[in-house]
Picture 1 (cartoon, rainbow, N blue to C red):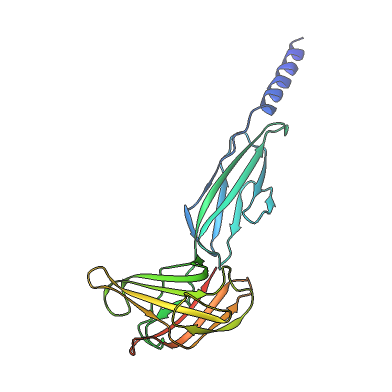
Picture 2: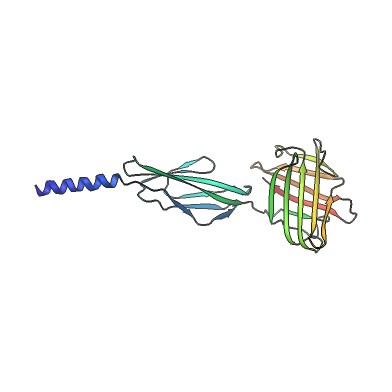
Length: 242
């Protein structure tokens, strides 16, 4: 009889353990990552016996922990990871989602300049891409001592006459402004200065802007020695974005 009770007790323990409700949770080793880095997701769930990760690209993984490698050309933004865990008998589950910040990588080739590119190279601190006034705009900025030695900032905008990024390589003729760009045209604007002395804007006059598409579908723009209205300002740059 005693043995019978012991067996029943053990069955009860197993039954209860199988019915424990899991609570999904995970941590990451950092709160923000640069594009190209690996996001390490560590499971810290309670009462979990199986794991189902849904990565930002839609792929499913069933390991307890997840290491996810981001694209080196990833644009700034957030990526959402979802973890679903289940109880021992698989009848109870819990789900949690977290968004992780991604900072676009400043590539070794990224720069812009107010002369032919040989001097005063500015390595941007930030880059972004998006629609602005009906054009797709690639922006790069730098805070600090700018291209004219003024303590302030430098802001470069490249305007293309579409509301979406180019899908193929090509050459654009540079115009004075971006208000009425046509197919095959583009415009570059460099703004520099600070609030004490005021900002000065230099717009492209003529020249060519070359667009190429990387193997991962990102857009790279290159321009050299572009004249502006200021006879001493020539714009150059090499920016990969989005």
